[in-house]
Picture 1 (cartoon, rainbow, N blue to C red):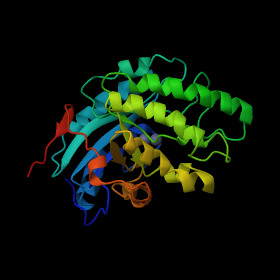
Picture 2: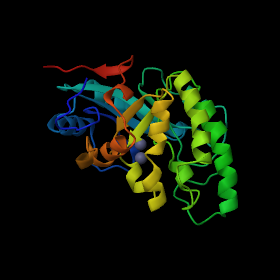
Picture 3: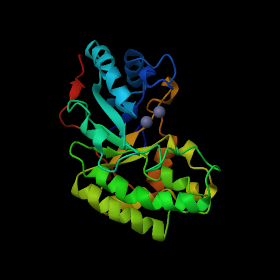
Length: 270
Ligand SMILES: [Zn+2]
Ligand SMILES: [Zn+2]
């Protein structure tokens, strides 16, 4: 299914890439440049998956689509989206607003539920508050992955990791994830191995134990999706950390999935 020479033990695809339209990616992250970079990196398929954090972002989708239509790539390119679960509501209403042709649809969380706290607001809230927010996180995300058209859960574990350095991905926390993974398997939502997570896991305890999450997911029949979460060209298709995690988790080619469904797609022009 994928080249194992250059990419070792993960598929030669990058299914999570941002563009200049996110407002926080490098200026040269145009769709044309991303495709060029992916071709040079030897990737077989990519997905451009811009953020939708709020209703305002929906307005820029037309621009993205216009640029997408002009592409003549030599690899398969999907135009998907990374949509946040709206922290103000638990019914996933932002996901419902996404035009159905944007696939794969990656669902992610960058804020804590029922709050305006973001994942990077460390040190500003007590551990007790974070524990309370963490408790809310599981039912909230479980509801989100049940939404129709959701293909992938982005970087599982990031919000949890921010609860405090004493968290290790083992014991009770794995039980809670197991329940979520059961729902993901039922709804065919993939677990994303995300290269960017290496910069977001803060403690060595978390770094040491993260591989337990994809290992348990795979064991429960959840497929793994691969993405760099690039905001800069040099990161497109770079999977050093993911590759290490996949090895430690004992993942095999059969555990991975590459989105192949309907959506805005450009097939290789030559
Ligand atoms: Zn971003
Ligand atoms: Zn992202």
